Image (cartoon, rainbow, N blue to C red; front, top):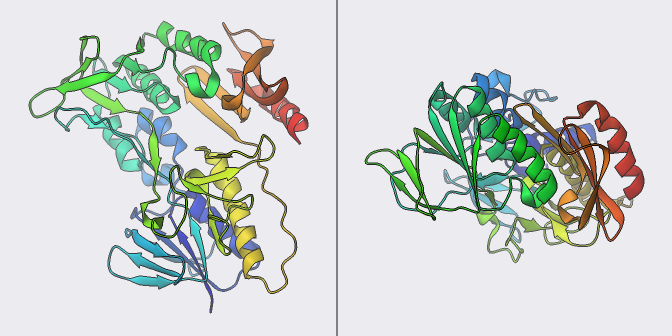
Length: 392
């Protein structure tokens, strides 16, 4: 019996296994996950779980599979993959042989390489992370968030809603500069500032202070911010070390072809945050997309690619051309995005204005490449259709 091994027990890994089964794969599927829990969804971690707490049942993904459909091996990681020998070497000493391999290992949060105590410093990636931060929040608690991307702003808004005093340290000139641009980032930052969140732009952390626990942050301009809790939201790094030594480009995730094959190697695929692939809706530049919907879309494509490569009479495969999308709930601010606004060189307000609810079109060389809605969720269907018509 042939085996498809899926490394990563997250949303992408689960959806890959489900798509394989629904497409007719009746042979073995093994899913290996480093977390002990069954797959769960991560967006609520920086939103509802951070605000309200919660249990695993609040985030668990309900598998559309029978219990015996998949061999789940959780709480164990892959130390090394050998693509030539088609073997996985696990951290507990087991060896798994495979006929096809899917990488769905996601990302790990980056941490700041600065001096100071470790206690009181948090990152946000797992359910345990979210629970730990939730326990720290409360009225008049002083929270310092490092980073003003989507996760940083979501954490800041959730903490402020819990009555915390919140400072955000941002290396860029405005929040969410890279994905949304200066003007839209400024508009969202103004909304957070109006809610009482203090931003320290163009600033970096020099060190943490405290004895047994971080009690403050010293910035590069000498400013000392007192803190009861610090959350570092300074980006992430793809979990691809286990793939090294196979001749793959893993400098930023793993580079894939237009069908998500890792390095073009047959009967392999990458999904979710680790997949760096060209999307010809925009250009031939391979990129990663760290968004929930992309984990689902890449999982479906990966399953199709694996089924194709293991078939004795494969039908032609179409190139993978997904429409990226994401959403972000930041207190009273709702952001919906379709396309790739981060690659644009200009923008135009399509509806509303930047001081309130609005729809913003993003363009590159005059061609629409994305649209972002601020506090206009009811118009998301309309603008998703609009940008799709421009791109397809």
